[in-house]
Image (cartoon, rainbow, N blue to C red; front, side, top):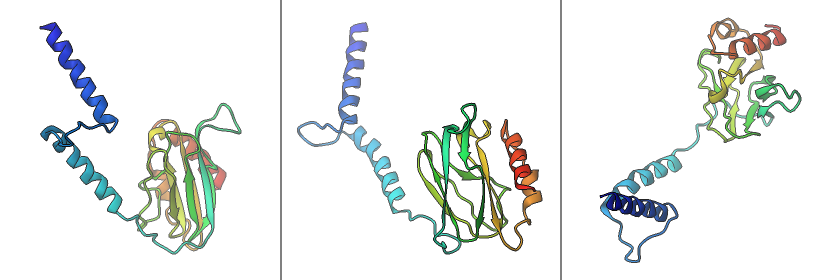
Length: 191
């Protein structure tokens, strides 16, 4: 009984290894179970490839501001999980580009910390994300996996009404160290 279970397990592992490497049997026909598994993956891939990126809410003005995402602050060895810079001043139409300098990071806007009527952004882990700033105000952002560790930052877009969402942004509650870091950022910004 144990021998049959072991042989069955080995056969399953071998089959998985061959299919993971893209190998196929000589007759080139897929087993029904393989076809059922492959179809949803292919459908998801096709859907992801056919979804165009969201159009910016305003025309980009050509200015690009890069924000690096680090696991360890290159300027402060005790600083962990940081955006550099963590505070940026910008103009409507500027493009902010978040660069995953170190792996496992991403950038997303924080609900309640972006001007009313804007869409915000949601980046993928280990992928650059760019966002064209559509209107004046405060834009708070986070690295979702490291939010509680205090990996947050803020963009202040100058212009008429730039202070309109400051009070609301200050009222947002944050987990772990993020609240303290935002207090420091608001102080540094003079808000």
